[in-house]
Length: 311
Image (tube, rainbow, N blue to C red; front, side):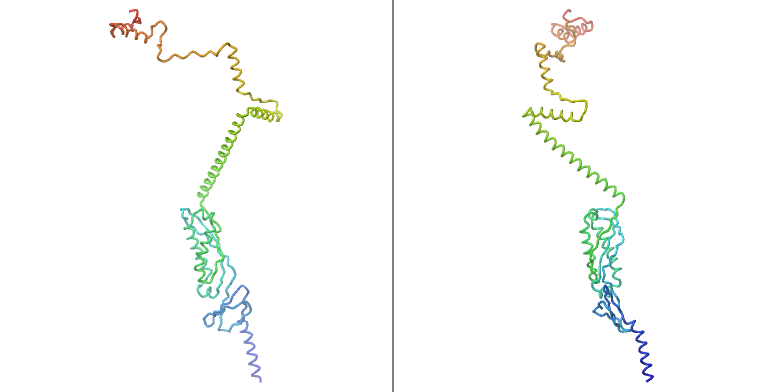
């Protein structure tokens, strides 16, 4: 009887020692992968308390939550030869705990390396404008590149996004100048369009006033009213040019005829000398008309200053 009691006490002590080591609690966001004699159990353990066979079973817990993994900045050259540094963030979760623990040694480290290489690849295939403004397509491309190896590891890619794109200072200044030039171009186009519309409206107004002369008088009176409304001591009154022309014609009629015309300017073909016929051109013509005149006599008479007609 004493031996039985001793055995019961020994079994109780052993149970108290072995039971805590064989009892495992799987949390709600975890799954338990059981290895028995080195072979994996195809059915993972669900959340709750789980009892393992002491010294035979070994359980590995796999987190099923969404993992947020920042991808370190990767430097690369875009397709349009611009050096940039791009960093991203990756969201993924385990959907198959058996493959995540058996097929890959460390699925988180593997996903980090694949994300870095995929980010470098997407930088080389894209242009700078796509990295700055067209990131939706890049996100889809990155997700597709990461989903191929992740599926074999029992991992599902929720989303991947580019956080920041670091540009060189020279490129930032060039982009600022480009944006400023584009804004100035649009401002000039808008100003020119406004001038064109204003000229068209003024042309229509001029044709209307030409057809109705009273409209010009009404416009002039309206301008006078606007100027006088400012409470100033100076009143600017436009004076029509047609009235000046009327006064000019009236003054010409009162002087007894037409306005005297200025004397016409002498033509270049007329002689430069006086009316007495002593000019060089008239003397040469008279010497040419004299019969029997020789060039030597004409030259002598020219030097003496005597007209050819008197000789």
